Image 1 (spheres, rainbow, N blue to C red):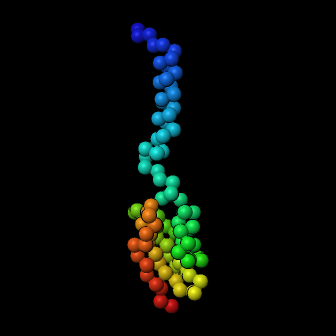
Image 2 (cartoon, rainbow, N blue to C red):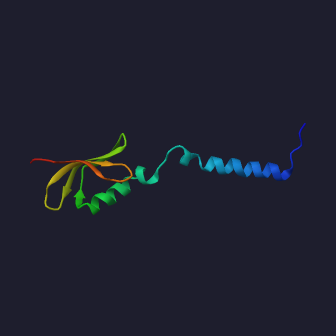
Image 3 (cartoon, one colour):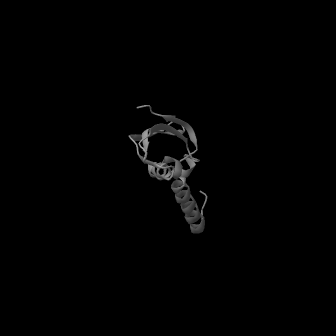
Length: 93
C-alpha cells in the first residue's frame, strides 16, 4: 500500500474543498446577469418608474408594460450582461 504523508492528504483536502466551493462559478452562474434587482436598478436609471413584470428569456430580460413618468408604456427586451436595449416597443393606448 502506498503511504501518503499527512501534508499531502491535507493539501488534497484543501484543494477538494476549494474546487467544490468554485463549482457554481464553473457552472456558468453570473450573479449580475441572474439578479432581477440589477435589472430593476437599470430600468430606474433609464427613466422607468414601474412595470408589470421582469422575465428572463433565453439570454435576454423581457420587461412588460414598463411605464415612464409621462405615462407612456413600453415593452422592452434587454441584453443580458450589458443591459443594452434590444427591443423597445411603445404600447398604444
